[in-house]
Each structure stands twice: as structure tokens, then as C-alpha cells.
Amino acid sequence: MRIWATANQKGGVGKTTTAISLAGVMQKRGHNVLLIDLDPHGSLTSYFGEDPDEIEPSAYDLFQQSLSQNLNTSSTIQKTRFKGLHFIPASSALATLDRQLGAKDGMGLVTKKALQQVAESYDLAIIDCPPMLGLLMVNALAACERLLIPVQTEFLALKGLERMVHTLAMIQKARKQEICYSIVPTFYDQRLNASIETLNTLKKQYKETIWNDVIPIDTQFREASQRGIPLTIERVSGKGGRAYSHLLDYLLQLDEETLPVAGSAEG
Image 1 (tube, rainbow, N blue to C red):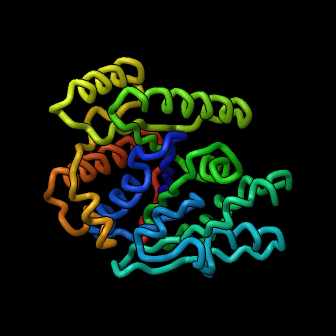
Image 2 (cartoon, rainbow, N blue to C red):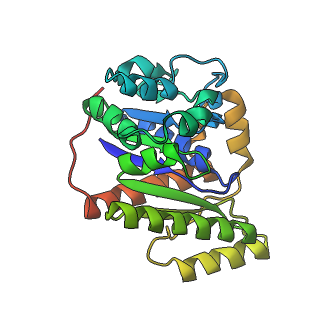
């Protein structure tokens, strides 16, 4: 099982859309995918029609189970209406974890251990991170093999990317282990000079880690979210769906070149 995470310390950059859309392409290709919502805002959870203020069990329960050394990942997994596409929902209670458990030993590895329990059942797991550094993002970074950083192609987003890369550098220094990451330009509008100039800046400053393509502005993403259907399942031939299909191909190829070969889950 491959494990990716989507993160950016700036909101509204297409983080959740990226996680869901990549999962949709994988599902469409016949693979089993698990989405994990570690963002207390619960956008991914809401996408599939669940309320983060009420849903039980959730990712929050994984941390509570870990305290009692009774971790049971399967008990938190929810099915979607799409075969082979499952998710662990977020609860708004996740926002309390830093205060409750941040100082306790071993809490940074809860998600990694949870995913190890279900590794044989899925081909890909994607973790949707909160937009701030804390216990939840540390969990995601400890668990993932590759971090995806969606960046809106507008100038204000560049500062957010700088903060995210700085955060990664701090964590890498503390862990003494490299975190592979890929920058994904999003909300690209070829009609706007701001989009064009921002993309050029990204390619110049981050040429070693940026995907050499873009996710375009596409109103179909919003329409698909209203229906609770990943656009890449519903309308993969549209420009947004095609872009995420190309991104998935790129990431899988990148993993083949940089990560150990993993088996796949059938079904």
C-alpha cells in the first residue's frame, strides 16, 4: 500500500479536492483506496455526506484506542457508495488532541500504526491534513511516503508554500529523515497574468519538486462536491478529471523511481 498525504498551511488551495480526486482516479482504475480525514474541519468527511460534529467512530477514536493499546483501525472505516473507496472520517473533536495528548509519548505514530493494520486491504491511502502544524500533521508526515502540497497559482499562495517548506525542513531535521514531497499547482487560469506569473515563479524556485503541469480552474469540481461524487469518478473526461489522471500517473511513476515496489490489493 502506498501512503500519500495532502497538506498546506494555507487553506483554500485544493487540498481536499486533490485527495478525493486522486482517490477517484484510482478507484475508477479498479484499485482499493482508503482516505483518512485528519482535518478537524472535516471537509472530506462532509464531502461524503457525514457530519464531523456527529460522526462516530472517527479518526479521533484511533487516538483514544491507542491510549489503551487497543488500536482497531477497521472499526473506524466507513464505506462510500463507490466500490473499493472507503474513508476514515474526521470528528471536530480532533481539534482537542494537541491539548489532550500532545505531550504523551507515541502519539505521533498513531496513524502510521493504524494504517499498518489495513495495509493488505488497500493499494493506496491518502491522508488529508489540517492546515496547521500540530499532532495531526506530525502523524500524517510520520505515516506518509510522499507529501503532496497543492498550491493555488496566485501570489498570496507563495507565502503559504514557503511556510510549508520551512515546516518540512524543521520536521526533517528533528526526524533526521527526508520527507519526499511534490508541489501541485492548482486553480490555474491561463487567462490571468497572475496565474501565469505565479506558475513561472513556482517552476523557477521549486524546479526539483514541482509537477510540471497544472490543475485548472474547473467549476465541475464544485458541482461534483455538491453531489458527493468525486469528479474523477463521475466525469473523468473533463479538463479537471484529465488533469488529476495525469497527476496520478506522474506520482505513481515517481514512486516507482524512488520507493520500494509494493504489492497491490485485489477487489
